[in-house]
Every structure is written in C-alpha cells, then in structure tokens.
Image (cartoon, rainbow, N blue to C red; front, side, top):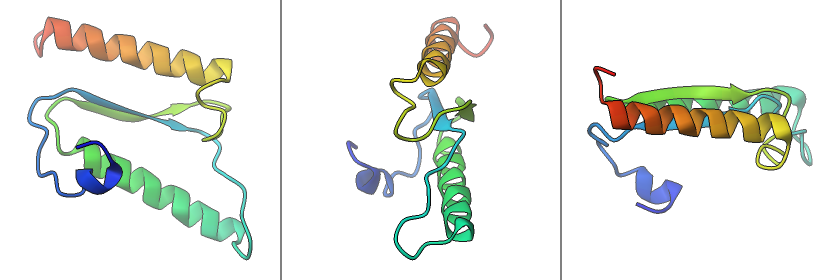
Length: 100
C-alpha cells in the first residue's frame, strides 16, 4: 500500500515494526471551523493512528514531537530530532528482534 486510502483495506502488518510520530500542536481552525472542531479532528487523527498501530505486533506511538505543527514537523529541529530518534529506535529494535 502506498496511500492512506490503500491502508484502510489492510488487516495486519504482522510483525513489521511501525512507529507513528505526530506533531504536538495541531492546526488552526479554517473557514467556519471552531477550536472545538479542530480538537475533535485532532482526537480522531490520533485514534486513527492508534488503530494503525494495532495492525502490527511491533508498534510504537503515537510519539508526540514537541513544539511543532503538522507543517513544521519535518524542518523544525524539535520535530526532526524526534523523527530521527524514533527512526533509530525502530531500526535498532528491528535489528535486535523482540528479545533485544
């Protein structure tokens, strides 16, 4: 699967290790949205991430990248540090196996 739409049909990732990293700060309301609408969207997004993690026996997250938004997570140092740290943790765990 290459897209979120294709992932919806997945029933299991087996033992494929998956880590989900998410931004601490959510987005601002757009158009007629309220702060409550955005909070509900944020909660739904985290629920979907947790559901994705339940498809693997080796899942971790959602790991929250502090101080960043969805837009800045890949270029803000706090977001990048979190992504790199979690990626290294994932690779180490995959190399060592479940007993490592």
